[in-house]
Amino acid sequence: MIDLTVGTIRNGIPLLPPALLLLLLCALAQETPLKPAQNAAQPRAAATGATFYRDVLPILEERCQICHRAEGIAPMRFETYEQTFPYAAAIAAATEAKSMPPWFADPHIGHFSNDPSLSAEQIAALAAWTHAGAPAGDAHDAPPPPHWAEGWSIPQPDLILQMPKSVPLPASGDVEYTYEIVPTGFKEDRWVQAVEVLPSLRANVHHAVVYVRPPDSHWMRHAPIGVPFTASTLTDPDDRRGAHWTDSDVLLVYAPGSSPDKWPDNLAKFIPAGSDLVFQMHYTTNGRAGNDRTSVGLILAKQAPAQRVLTLQLTNDHFVIPPGVPDYRVEARGTLPNDATLLSFLPHMHLRGKRFQYNIIHKGKNSGGRPDQEIEPLLDVRYHFHWQMSYRLAEPRSLKAGTELQAVAWYDNSRENAHNPDPEAAVRWGEQTYDEMMVGFFDVAVAAHLDKRSYFIRH
Image (spheres, rainbow, N blue to C red):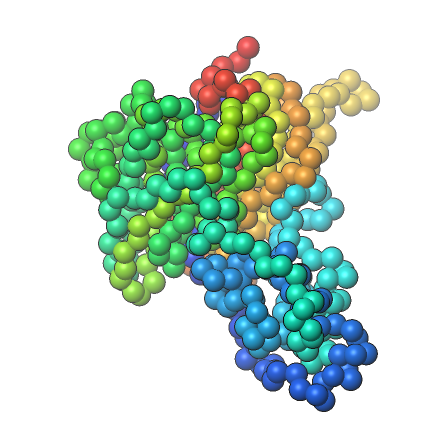
């Protein structure tokens, strides 16, 4: 059992590889090329009534352009008719198969505010448009274009903090976890309403975790400021240990496919005056040398919120997955030391990850008076290596002190797993993607005056 009262954050959280190429769309576009609709297509268009500007573009703006736009993470843009038209058949096929937009939660368990899944009507409209020859229609039917801040998914940040020095990356080999400490320069406490991490070299960023180091913290206190470093370059033994474990607050976890944080007015994350931000970067190599200089964008709250958001986790780092096993189960449990409101989840595994579940365990007694328990599922995810997504409850859940939470992960270490680096290996916890991890992040809202250490003091 993993007890949440420990309150530590495992400081080594490789989230997923940066390959976000939407191969299905590209492959289908090559197999089913289209030509812009000419007059011969108009009778079919009239029969279905589906056109790009009136029926398709609103769907793209609402559900797709968060990735498929200029400076978005997708390899193709769906902002104009000319950009979208070549992918019409691919879009119809991917949405009918429900592989796009990506979403991996069991629809029968929980409801989530960031679920991008299309309705049956939207899927039908995209199919009808494709079958009609993908006509443009009347440009005057187009909805107003959304405003995207340059490079950001959140609105234009109030403040952008960038790693002062870029990190040189080799073309091949493993890269040790790299850190860079960035002073905020805050003269007063700040509340963060929205935050996004933006790597400059997405293709090599396997994950980034940005921690808040308050001015009274001793965590890696002798580490250099404003330059990249690794655990092996630190000379102080406590600093070296700190590069692997910390109880500092997490500002945001980033991976390709994950979402920025955007909280309502009554919620925010907290950065004390004089704090540093500690960037933990896990880089992977892909045959090309390069340099990364990651930034974090902050939208600051106009006033102090009613509640503070903390990122906690359920972790099990003591497991061995036997060779060849297709469905190996690993579990972690913990109890909440104080009341909290459950907000969201972010499950994390590596290449052998198959499924991840969050539950509440209700203790009781059976008809014979013996101890019994009932498991209430909160989230059940078909894990996908290239889409490490967060799942935000549509209705936050109030939980009392003493509530027992459970995270369960399943791994496929067999030859049937196409991502498996070595089905003959026994697999343990480790930082590289050929190792494994079991981390169930979750966000909670607590009283605004509670930091994480205070929250873990039982009353």
